[in-house]
Image (cartoon, rainbow, N blue to C red; front, side, top):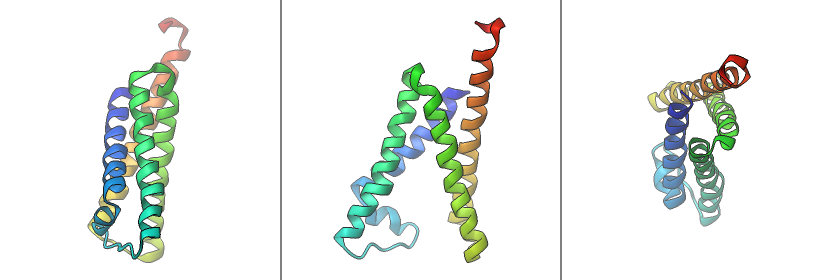
Length: 132
């Protein structure tokens, strides 16, 4: 299960990160966000693009190297749940019920939960003396 969680989270982080690094204005235009100047473009490349792409690298390392698996799953769970919580707060505070926001909330909550379940299963398997 951890492989599935890492692949799905890795794909999401990597795709969004690379797309934002390459063309942050186009990526954010999907959400009706306009970046008015080069400083805003650089900020989005850094925070959203670089941050997401580096999280994607962590997911791939978790898939390829056992020592990175736990940190990758923890990061995926917390970051995705954080994104979902932020979107949910936006729904509550701003009253937005647009499909892109609701779908994003559901996808992020699902990916974070998948990582958390995989992490729980990994920890049970490694702490069970019968399996060692």
